[in-house]
Length: 493
Ligand SMILES: Cc1cc2nc3c(=O)[nH]c(=O)nc-3n(C[C@H](O)[C@H](O)[C@H](O)COP(=O)(O)OP(=O)(O)OC[C@H]3O[C@@H](n4cnc5c(N)ncnc54)[C@H](O)[C@@H]3O)c2cc1C
Image (cartoon, rainbow, N blue to C red):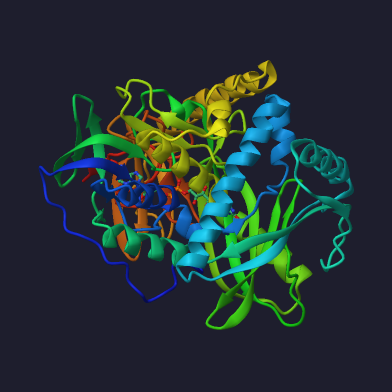
C-alpha cells in the first residue's frame, strides 16, 4: 500500500551511524515534527542528530492527506467542550504560527504548494447541527469563516463552513527540503536506527539498535512517545484511516473537504505525473479494533465510484495518528526526563500545522524563546467531561486486552498454514501465537505485543499485526512498523 507521496524515485541523502558521539540534541523520528525541530535547532548552531527507525516519511507524514489548514473538521467545538475559550484561542494561535512558518518555508525553499479553500461539511442531515456548532466555535476563537452550501460536490450536503486561502502540498517535497537543510547546516540524519531507550543523566544516553550516542536534549518526535514515562499512551487514542488517489473524468472539486459525521469523507486534489488526481480519505477507526480493515478500503472505494463515476484508483494507503483525549496536543517536557527530554503527540490528524507548532515550541524551550500561546496550552485545565471520556477510553482498552487474551486462549493455532495474505491468532504451547502467510512465506510469532502485553490482531488490508491497546503495529515477521513499542514480536519456530 504505497501512498501517492512515497511513489517517487528521488532519494533523501542520509548519514552513517557512528557510535559514542555526543550531540547537543538528538531528535527521535524523521517525520514532519522531527525534521522541523532538527532544522530549527541546527539553525541556532547546535549539533543535531535526527534518528529515524525506518526511513524519512515512513510512517504518518508519508501517508497523510496533507491539508495545511486552520479549519480542522470540528476541532474548535471539540476543544471548547473540553477547555476554556482562552485555550481554544491559544490552539488556533499556535497552529496559525505553525502554518505560517511551514508555508514560508515552502516559499523560501521552492517547495510547491497550492492555495485552496477548506470546508467542513455535513454529508447527512444529522450533521447540519455540528456544522452550525463548528461555525459558531470558529467565530468565537477568531477564525474568519463563512457558512455556505457546498455547490461543488457531486452529492448532497447539508451546510458547510468555509475558510478561504488554506493550502495543500506533497508532504515528501517538504521532508526532502527539510532533510537537505538539516544536513547542509551540519546536522546528521540517520535512517534504519531504532532508539530503544534514554537514560537521563547529566547528559542523556540514547540507546539504539546500532549502539549508543549521547545528547544534552532528546526530543521524542515519534508520533506517540516511545518512553512510557508520563503515560502518554493512555492519554491519546490511536486512530487508523484510509486514503486513496483516483483519476476522475470530468470536474474534480477544487476545495479541501472534510465531513462532520462518521464515516468521515475527506477530499482534496493532488498532482501525479503531471495529472490532477482526487485524493479521497476516511473510514477511521481505533487501531486493531476493526474486524476487517480491508472492508473499510472496499467501502471507501465503492463510495468514490458511486459519487465520481468512471474514477480509476491509482493508489491506496492507510495511516494512523493519535487523538488527544482533551483534543489539544501534548507538547513539552516529558515527566521523569530531568527537564531534557521533550515529546509531541496527539495532533488528531491535524499535524501539518501542529507539527510545526510543536517544533517551534520545543525548539523555543531549548533555545530560551517565549511564546504566550505555548504557556497557555502548557498550563491548560481539562473540563471534567473530557477527563471522563479519557477514563472511558482506558476502560475500553482494558476490555480489548481481556477479549484478545480470552480469544487466543480458547482456540488452538490451526495445523495448516493460513492461505496467502491471511493471518490467525491462537494458542500454541499455552501462549498466544500469531501465524500468517505472505509472499509464500509463513511466519509464526508471539501474539503478545511487546509494549504492554495486548494480543495483536490481523490487519487484512495492510497484512500486519496490530495491537488494539495502544496502536503498536508489526510486520508478519514481527518487525516493528510503528506505535509506542520499540521491540519486535518474538519469533516462534
Ligand atoms: C490518514 C491520515 C490523514 C491525515 N491528513 C492530514 C491532513 O490532511 N492535514 C493535517 O494537518 N494532518 C493530517 N494528518 C495528520 C498528520 O499526517 C500527522 O499528524 C503528522 O504527519 C505527524 O507527524 P510526526 O512527525 O509527528 O509523526 P510521523 O510522521 O509518524 O513521524 C514519526 C517518526 O518516528 C519514527 N520512530 C518511531 N519510533 C522510533 C524509534 N524508536 N526510533 C527512531 N524513530 C522512531 C517513525 O518511524 C516515524 O518516521 C493525517 C493523518 C492520517 C493518519
